[in-house]
Length: 271
Image (cartoon, rainbow, N blue to C red; front, top):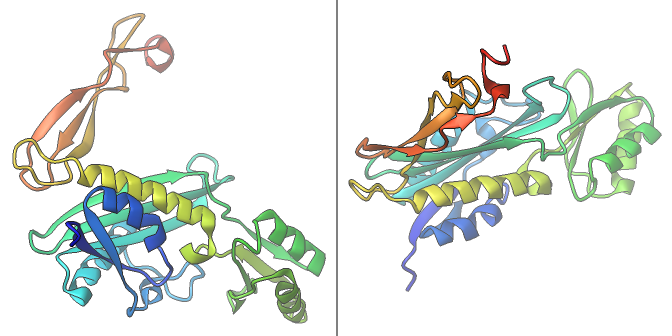
């Protein structure tokens, strides 16, 4: 008999493949709840707008996973994609996972972000442009969405170049065609990799127990600024420590990171 805690994951897009192994290492056996249409909570292509933040959406999914399955523990996942936070030019992915304990009404979350995504879109006016874009995003291993600039979605199901060519050719009869990466997890291996990275972070936190009450989820909560400049010894805006906090009992401890940083980070030496 398994000594892992059954943990419900609300997904229609196969996300369990990214979560099962890391969560098992932390003591949780992931099983799927797939008889709920998660697209009703929001779609990347805009047919249904997501309500609230990423964290709120993931929390709702985790709670639904518990209520629909009757399991004590549930997990919700949510992603968001757009331009990078500096210039908005490079594609940027964000993933959040929420683990929820329905009995204690506690949640533990993990968040990752970065440029490891093929997120892109392009308006094309001929088939050659479309096929070039498709190759650039890794189609057919990665899915593609065919639509129109006014938001009408023609197809998300093209699985090879022949099917895509037929779909785009028909759509071009009505004008320019919008192409976009399909960001649903089961159609986007790059996204699945980021979800797996987030799952590893969540598993690490779940496996870290509070030294005070032994609850899972003891982890980084907030930085403590004030590392000193190695030249003038004035405090900087860089972290000198990080506060770890328990989500259950509120116990906190401070972990030292460094005492000094280079003058590059100093507002006095390098204003």
